[in-house]
Image (cartoon, rainbow, N blue to C red):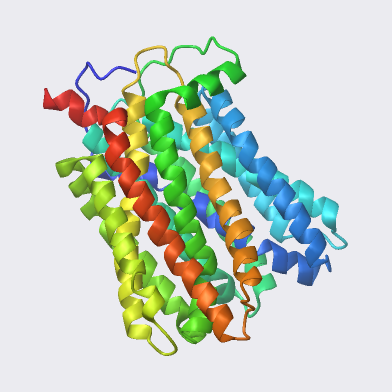
Amino acid sequence: MSEAAPRTHPGTLRLAAFGLLGTPLAFAALPIYIHVPRFYAEHAGLSLGLLGGLLLALRLLDAFVDPFIGAWTDRVPRRPVIAAALVLLGVGFTGLFQPPEGSGVGWLAGTLALVTLGYSVATIAYQAWLADADISEPARTQGVALREFFILVGIVAASVLPTTLADNLGEGLYAMVWVVWPLIGLGALTALVWAPLPVLHREPVQVPVFAQLRAAVGEPRFRALLTLFAISAIATAVAATLGAFYIADVLQAEAMQEQFFGAYFLCAVASLPVWTAVARRIGFARSWFAGLVMTVAAFLIAPFLGPGQTGPYFVLCVVAGLALGAELVVPAAWLAALLASDPPGSERAGACLGWWTLMNKLSLAIAAGFALPLIEALGFHAGQREPAGLAALTAVYAFTPIVLKALTALLLLRLAPVIGEPGRDATAG
C-alpha cells in the first residue's frame, strides 16, 4: 500500500464508531481467561489438574495458529470474515457459560475452541482492516487510541458485571450471555455497517501461506518492531500476573485491590488522547520511549514498600497506568503505519498481525510459566508471608518490568532508525 496519494481523516465520530467493536471483543475475552477454571471446577466438577492441562494446550494451540489465521485473512474480504467470526464468538460464549446439564470436559473443549477461534479471527481481521484503511496517519493513530479505549471499557465492564448481575459468579456469568449478544450486535452495526473505513485496493495474495509468513516475519522493519513489542509485553504480563499477590501479601491490602486496579486502568484510559497527541507531535519512537521510562520509574517504588503503604502504591498505579496508555497506543499505531506504507502488492497486514497476536498471547503464557514457578522456587507461598518468600515476590514483581522495560528502551534507541516512521517520514520531506 502506497503513501503517495494524500489521505483523508474520516472524523472522530466515525473512528469512534469503528473502534466500538473493541468493547464486545474485550468483554467476551476477559471471562474466558479469568473465570473459566473456577466456573467449570465448581459447576462441572472438573479437577484443577485436568482444567489446567486442557487450558494450557488450547491456549498454546490458539496462539500458534494466529499467524495462519492472519495470512488467511489477507486472502478474503475483511468485513464478512469479521461478521462471521463475531457469530462464532457469540455462540461459543453462550455454550461456554450456559452449558447443558451433565456437560464435561468435551463440552468445555469444544466451546472454548469455538470462542477462541471466533475471537482470534475477528480480532486479527479487525486490526488488519485499520492497517488497510485509506486514511491519514494522524487518523490511524487516533483510530488505534479509540479502539484501545473501547477495549478498556470492555475489560472494566467484564470485570464488574459478573458480581453485579447476580449473587454468585456462576449466575453472573450465565447472565453475561444476555449482555454479550447486544454488545456484539452494536459493535458489528457501527463498525461494519454504519462507519466502515475506506480501504485501498488489495491485490490477491499469490504466494503460499508459509512463504507469506516467513516473508512477513523476515522483513527487517517488522521484525525489529515485533522484538520490541514482545520484550515489553512480557514485562507487562509479569507485573499483571504477580500484582494481586504483591497487593495481598506484601502490602497486606487485599481489600483495596479493586481500587488499585481501577486507578491503573482509569489512568490508562485518561492518557490515551494525550499519547495520541504526543505521538503525532514527537513521533512513535520518542513517545514510546517516554512511556517505557515512566514504567521503569513507577516500579522503582515497589521494592521499598511494605505492609500498609498504600499511598505510595497508588502513585505507582497512577504512573504505570499513564505509561500503559503509551504501550497501548504507540506500538499498535506504529505497526499500522508501517503496514500502510507497504508498496502495492505487499499484502501482509493479516500475516503480520497474526505474528503480533501470537507474541501477545505467548507473553501471557511466558509470564505465568516463568514468574509463578520462580517465586515458588524462591520460597513464596500465597498467604504465608514468610520474609524470604515476600522478598522473592517483591524482587520478581518489581525488577522484571524494570529490567525488561529498560532493555526495550535501550533497544528502541538502536532499532528505531531501522523501523523508521512511515507517516512522519512521508510528510517530513
